Length: 114
Image (cartoon, rainbow, N blue to C red; front, side, top):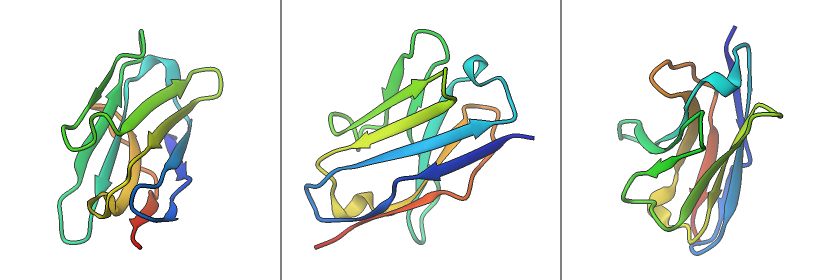
């Protein structure tokens, strides 16, 4: 079955960086676009970024443009999210998923605080 396991979260100061990873299994990874979402306490889950399965075309939500970079490794069945210039409002649980097809992992907590 579809399995997605996120890692790399933690506590970081404002302006700091983190790199999230997502290990995928149970499906043909290279056939699917992938997305990162996040959910802050008391808020709905929101899309952060998407990467296509062909040509690795990325799109980003306005609130992370210029700060976050999404990438994928089809040989390793991995997606990544490099997060720079982190802000307190980036605090959330971050999830990866198959774009439009779902499947959710447990997420990884990112906390941005001084």
